[in-house]
Length: 340
Image (cartoon, rainbow, N blue to C red; front, side, top):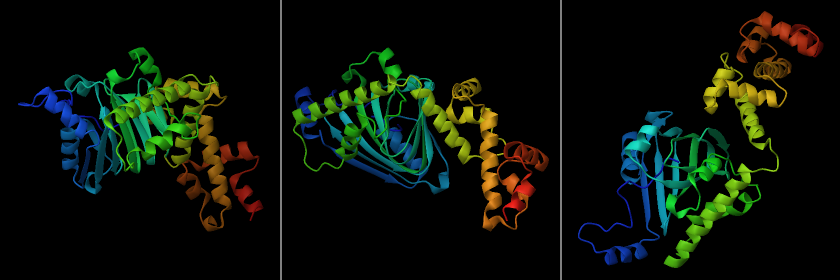
């Protein structure tokens, strides 16, 4: 997620001139401290993120139409944050992890919009109610579209009983809101920032630890599914959705899909082969079907076959006609005439 505590914001370290006892007392008073940042200027947003959290490479879809809000609230060693903004990507690069080292475990829960998280060689897609774990000590990327709302929960990595090897198996795995543990944890996470009454300091610490344990359990359930093909199937399903959304792109290809999912072209081919398909055949079948439906639509009655075919990526009409006849047993013009 795009939000982290600033490297200098260590609540356990006394401020200049402050005794540890005074600082601890302040911690007790501030365990539920709330902060809100709102801005419509990208420069202010970058500065606010850098000042409040950690520096990230931020890539907005449109810097002229930018708006963002951050609302944070603390529960002992758990920082809860609501982040709402226009489409953008956040990159925690290897250079940034070296320059601003910070070892945190985080959960990103999508409230609105769609999210894509990349870390440790995996890419997961999240819809509203879904969440995933990631860590700040290693590079990652969040892609968030369109206008989105992400709820982020942050723990010091030292507060979570996982080895690095165990952690690498759990990051960037979608926990669906309707999964066994997701049905319990997702509503709890969604409502945490809205709680009006404040827990005691001890209660806040137990709450922070309990949520972390449940989050790890949820990710472990996803990492060790009953279905050994579950991870590949999820990636395959997300790739099919990507194809369906981009049929009008004449350059849609395995390379384009690989780039969108941060995997190799070889991985794309391997995933499709695992489910008995090829990428080229899948793209062609989807394009032919949407063309067939468009040909029969009354609102397209005056449109030419060339125009319809080009809309969905068939630049060459002869190629479209041969592919259509092979799939449906008749030329597209005759198919259209028979159903008028």
